[in-house]
Length: 168
Image 1 (cartoon, rainbow, N blue to C red):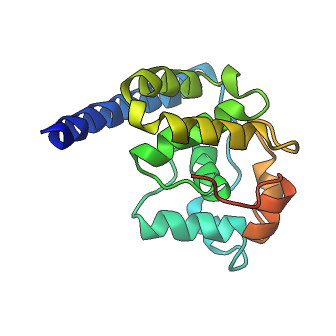
Image 2 (cartoon, helix red, strand yellow):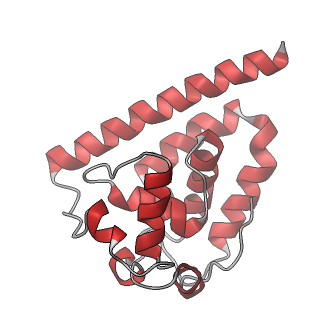
Image 3 (tube, rainbow, N blue to C red):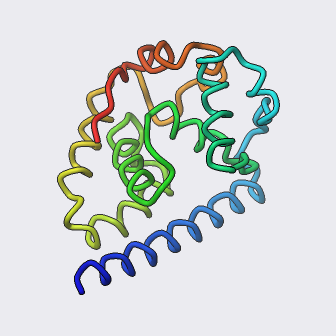
């Protein structure tokens, strides 16, 4: 019974995060808050194998996803920070980003954590660990230079921002 309730709760939270995400993307588009990303998915496929750019394309292809216009860096973050694209991955990545320099200024991070912290007590330890993971990085803020990182081998891109291990 509890497992069924948690499954329903997770579905509702996942739906809510999707709606919030769509609203944030729409607001960025309407208000001009998003800059044009210089690479499409086809371009990333041509990056050297093992690079962050190629890894992002391979990850999106494997999951049958495409870039969301005006929010391409979100998908890059999943690969760079090593978080899956599911409810737990989204929530833990938001906790990680909250720990990064400037993370609490991100509206999507704030909303996602405001919803998930009180409703997911079984994940509090993981949320805290991932917040600490973000806070421990000295070379990263909420908006790293993704363009400069894309051609680098994935392990070098992670090392450049001080992220050399998975922590969730």
